[in-house]
Image 1 (cartoon, rainbow, N blue to C red):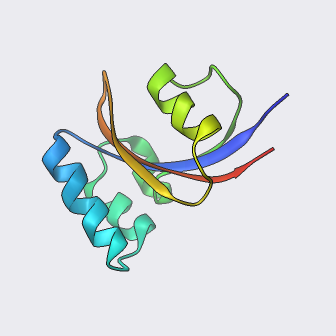
Image 2 (cartoon, rainbow, N blue to C red):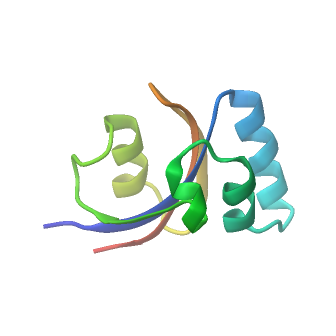
Amino acid sequence: MARACARHILVNTKEAAEKLKGQIARGEDFGKLAKKHSLCPSKKRGGDLGEFGPGQMVKAFDQVVFKKPVLEVHGPVKTQFGYHLIQTIYRT
């Protein structure tokens, strides 16, 4: 069965997510930005969600983690929780 490890930053608006994505693209640290800005409790771990399998996250999130290229920052991805920037660390 497939497994993946991912981290994310969750914010309330698409604009906030796009701004953070720009900061990451300019070399700012994903983990530090997650600790400072994310609304998810995972922010304490720099946005790290640990390892999980398909179907454990909401569909839009799952599709990025299990289908998009690894180590790239994807998003903003809208879910019922807000807007995510998602980085898949590895996938098996």
